[in-house]
View 1 (cartoon, rainbow, N blue to C red):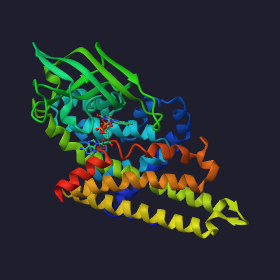
View 2: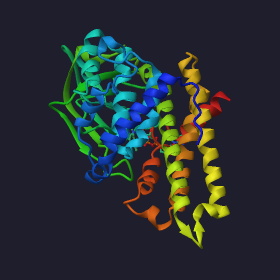
View 3: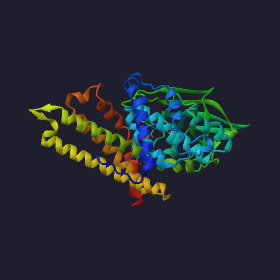
View 4: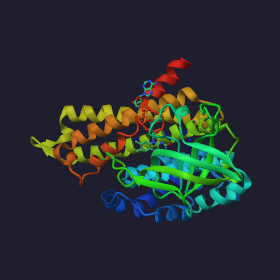
Length: 379
Ligand SMILES: Cc1cc2nc3c(=O)[nH]c(=O)nc-3n(C[C@H](O)[C@H](O)[C@H](O)COP(=O)(O)OP(=O)(O)OC[C@H]3O[C@@H](n4cnc5c(N)ncnc54)[C@H](O)[C@@H]3O)c2cc1C
């Protein structure tokens, strides 16, 4: 399929080739094993850091590459090349949701203590917002932090947290007033330690990632770990939502393009009724529809990305991109699985995993229904 290059320059395309080569060489050969193990090694973060891939958008003074969101966008698209949604999710959670709030809202000392080692791959991060009683309705979180001498005492539970077992630090949303809600939520950076316990959850897809419930029982968090302003945690949540949703849209576009290429190759090879599958009109037309879906999703996502990078606040375009791409990606994977026939249902084929992995998109990072609600209000 012909590439749609803007908003990327030649420099970004060179970066893409280098990232793709690295992921295909160093990580993809292990994908099957990691999915089977339901775990990928922590050393993956060190390997990515050695290539500069954990700090593409971060300033050089923190050990980053001094690039911008476009460089990061290339990584988001290419992560599908690993062939393990779970591994991509663990890396994505670290670079796209756990570290950006520290970069944007952290003090110099927090940058030094968390961002610098995170970019080096020495400390792994997680973002803890969702709770058993509060998902889409973020304002309903109940985990509470009570003021004590020198800091806070934290009690509560987070759930469905990506990197929830391996994370060294959890950027955690907590209630800092009696009522909580929009004006009573703050963020604390919580180190793994006494009173912090994780338990890994079993799930449909993303098997290599450690999605976990994390409980906090009388955890002392020092004063200097407050991230951003007290009771202004909602600002912090809103500040990264657009990037998180763009990153998910880019990830879907990358996964869809790769799935199309592989399925088209399969259809050219596989014979039925004396000719390749691609010689049957129904399959050719399905592939044409799928190519149209890849292209449409890419155009809408790149348009939102272009606006985001230009400094607009493209809430509508990003929301539409998230809504369109996540459902389209799942539908495309299902169609690719169908073209593979019985083979598509087998563990040894990539598409079985890709179809399961894609089911998360319409739920995570703000569900389809929430995207529609945002759009309905705006429109
Ligand atoms: C694999 C995985 C990884 C995740 N990683 C993280 C992470 O790293 N950090 C983190 O904080 N969270 C994480 N999440 C949580 C994720 O963001 C939530 O699951 C998601 O926001 C939905 O919340 P919920 O599951 O509580 O569903 P609910 O909010 O209970 O929603 C249930 C259903 O009702 C719909 N619904 C809710 N409100 C409305 C409404 N007003 N109108 C119409 N329909 C509505 C929803 O769309 C959904 O279909 C992860 C989830 C999964 C599954």
